[in-house]
Length: 120
Length: 112
Picture 1 (cartoon, helix red, strand yellow):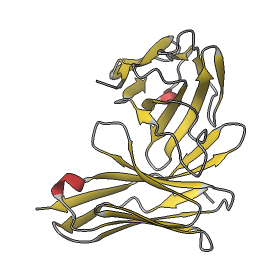
Picture 2 (cartoon, each protein chain N blue to C red):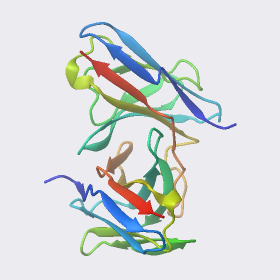
Picture 3 (cartoon, each protein chain N blue to C red):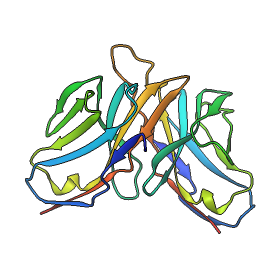
């Protein structure tokens, strides 16, 4: 089954304790992204990756790191989590960047099930 | 002013009703207008999208874009309990990357 998986689904941690949220897709997609979702703010993009070893900042990258060593995996790293990073996190992937196609078509972005992170 | 505004609801309608969901936006450079559906404890899934202005229909769903008013709508005809979810509008502009701005979502309940 084609899917994006995230682990863990739920995580409670304390300020300053490094953590990694894993993301994996089995669709051979080149483009992957991380978002956070907060009430009243919608989803906001943290980082994205066009392909292996190619990553860049989205709209809210402060306090996060990513890596893309393999095509299928795109982990999100919080080196020193703080309470303002308490949020619902989503990983997403698409075959290419969404606007790669011509003629007004977009490449569908598939989202993982989410990771609910609480930083105390 | 937020780039994308959406009434969070909640919106509760009886089964069979026509549902209208709306968003306004401020950036006239947005190129793609999307609607996502998000069930509880799930990730968003792309429902439909339009490029530039106009209408697009897919089964019971119709998406409308009015660029002159910076207003987009999603209509759901003959609503079903399975349509109960949060609906997110999103706008996309190609800059150095695919910049997607999501609305906060409208929670919809369709009562049998």
